[in-house]
Length: 124
Image (cartoon, rainbow, N blue to C red):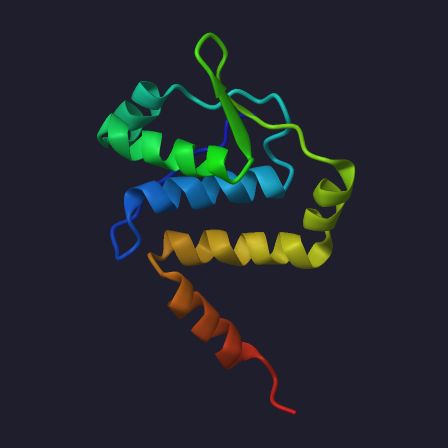
């Protein structure tokens, strides 16, 4: 499976949109351990961005332990422990991933997304 990464105009920087979308795909189980991400230059060309923008997103994903990068193998989704994967694939996490994808698509930042959740939360 090769999910599409999209960049939307708005306050969220492109590297953050890339990072967040890939993180959602990994945590949602759509990209499994060992899945090879597109090469930096290819994804940058596909999105019309500078390679450094994609490289920054990949570096942040690697720092978070979500991907590993090796010269010959490229960037691949890292193996995860089964407990972490099971927790993140629960119904609430999947709903949060869907909401996050929608918020990013609309160009919302984290504060705007949290404000939308607070506004929708029922009052006691």
